[in-house]
Amino acid sequence: MLIFDASTLILLAKTELLEGFLDSFDGAVQIPLDVRRECCGVKKSLDALLIEKAISEERIMVKAVRDKQLCRKIRNDFGLGNGESEAIALAFSLKAKLVAIDDRNAINACKLLKLPFTTAINILIGMREKGLIEKDPALIKLEALERFGRYKSSIIADARLRLGG
Image (cartoon, rainbow, N blue to C red; front, side, top):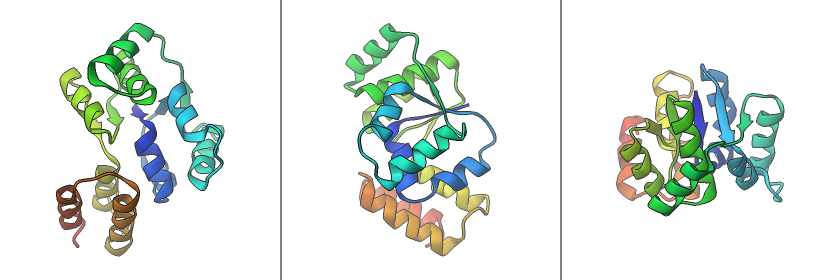
């Protein structure tokens, strides 16, 4: 089971990687309620529509976080927003195999809680390694992730090398 945070889900949708990733992922994909609100709330951008479509097709399941106290503790301890804290709390309580999250503080929370995590860039690299995307399109997607995301230049440079660029 994979739990998405809003930032990673939005980045995959904006770079048009979401559908290909969902097609290739073997397992359940879930998001908490606040992540859905952050992704699909009032705006009707293309990324919001793509995410909402995946939800309506039940390729992404929306799940309520039951342990509100854990969610509050994670939010307060790590200075996270509602979506990040809900994603981590949901992953922790469901013993998810992976959390897709790009926020630095949230990544630190995953490390401390011993939750395996990935980022949008790592998902792109994984898709390239599995042959789901060719080198040149992957490098173009990386440029889009650089434009839309908040990545350090060293992370982008490393990803470019790993993608063969």
